[in-house]
Image 1 (cartoon, rainbow, N blue to C red):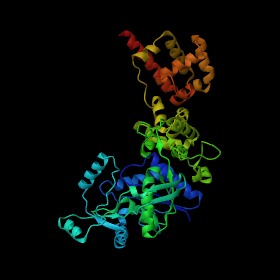
Image 2 (tube, helix red, strand yellow):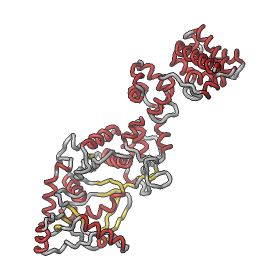
Image 3 (cartoon, rainbow, N blue to C red):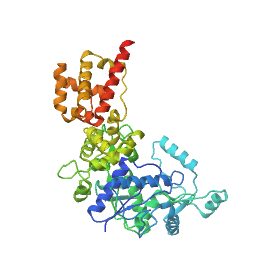
Length: 480
């Protein structure tokens, strides 16, 4: 059975690249009726925080990527948090030491840093020079007598190592240029390399799908699998996500955390759909794809080896489609947290109608809330806006509309087309100009939802109050 894992470190929030890795693992497992595992890699005790573990799990659930084994649901190969598995790693490290495949290293961090700088200055790769590999027992005792606690390093054999990557095809590494690497730190915690290999071996991971920034780690991991007597998994290294110009993804270019996208109010299905297109595409070249369709069509062989390029316009294009098609009842519940406190008292049917009126062309709920401000708060007219409404034409439109609303009440909106055309006829203005001036008077903006929706949502009483207020403000400004 296919078994894959997503193994984040709880040192911060997960970003688009991390989430895409989780998504592709999840899809691969679902498509092949396998198991998707969540494992928390928190051996970096100084930077890891359980707070981030909770947020990571929350974000993954929000995206729809649930797991069959993990910290909260358990499973046959737990625990699924590395800090709870330290004794396991220690046992494997001692095994490698006893078998002569690892050795104690007494070099201090300052010594290693000095040698690294010296190697760079000579134009050489800053690899460990293996100087502790063949220490005598007396040399070891001397270091220990001076209070040095050793780390453990794995002995890298010479020669070359090649493996077949599912995405990148054949990959070959020259082991002679690599230095022996740490598998157990001096303070007694495992290195990333040892912990990840032990966990993948014991949890029976069959495929490791991860970012290509881990490609250089793969030969080290394969060496450890062999040394421990376990078969290595199949590897697939995903292309990196770059900015639109091919530059590294920055905060400005879209390197937001999933929490950031949630705070902006993107629908999860829109973000998932967009992540699907970052390096993968179905053979039909369809761009709007549901998660269910992706499970059916997903193939790791369709992932490109070229970097994926983040395109905010493409994301917003997809997000607008999902927002436009969202169930109105669901949309109503989702938008409430984005509205100001005073909006919480408004009946949900009104919020539903408001959201439906303003959502066309928008990508997320924070935009919807911003576009709805004219309904929730009276518009503020600065001097330039008042000037635009103080002319003869604007005043004629406002007064004629006000007279019609006073006379007809709800009937004004019930026969909106007829009545707005009457205003245009009586003022001698084009219908488009009438509507623009009325929109400005009622909302303070020249753009927004259909004027009929604005008047209907505000209601005749609020419309009359706002129009009278504009008349009063224009009069006060003219008297100055």
